[in-house]
Image 1 (tube, helix red, strand yellow):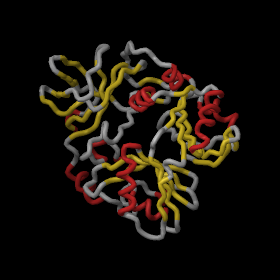
Image 2: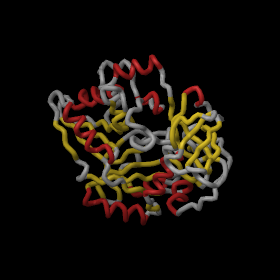
Image 3: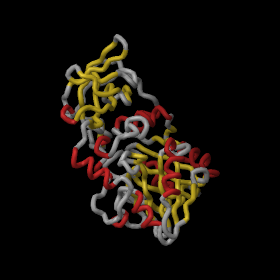
Length: 338
């Protein structure tokens, strides 16, 4: 079972069926409107290597990697998952950034490639939870892939391609199918004991795992340095990407602020947008917050790097109300056995 982080306080929030499935069984979330872009052609891999921060030369065919797309000033346009195949590359992007990312790709198109928006043709279902493989494996041919791998297969007669989550996050599998097969896939998973998740269940899941999204926890001007996502940037890969020069300059000067997790004492949560103060000085706002049944009231904010160490006291204020908090490590939970 997923274990909690060093936070010990428990919140009184009631757990939904979907939340319980994520913690102890398996739950599925239908990812509506995510952007899915296919790049084919002899220069497809080189093109994606020039626009994303990951080093695709190190990524074998049939694998995926999490990466970033940056603007020229090194601010984050979007988080992206890159699926590498022998004959094509596929990008998965946030629904809110779908149009902006498409424009980003089109304006930077180089070489012999063909770009195609397949978002409306494909359905995506994310299955997460410790029993994911138990529920999925008996239905899937061939067997589930290793972490970080992608395979083509059939799940109970439905054509899918399957990507298995890497070990640095929760156990899980992403299933891609034709849009016309999505309802059948949902029914098949439910019959196999995989609980359908609501959007609220999924948001809590992402928050507990400390996953920051553009437009929510990541502000328009944030670079990978401020967002704590430098691990997604491959330095010196020999294929310059947009924002590389600006990012190098930001690294030299250092970030003034850093995105951190926080835990709030008590059983009342501050609202999103509440002012956040360190040592009496307002430094940011509550960017996201939730009442986790496992670890209490948690959220994310951005504070000066000099105060970003775990244990730093925070005060959050909205109107006449105030809340006491403390900086904690992200993610707030882990896959480690209890």
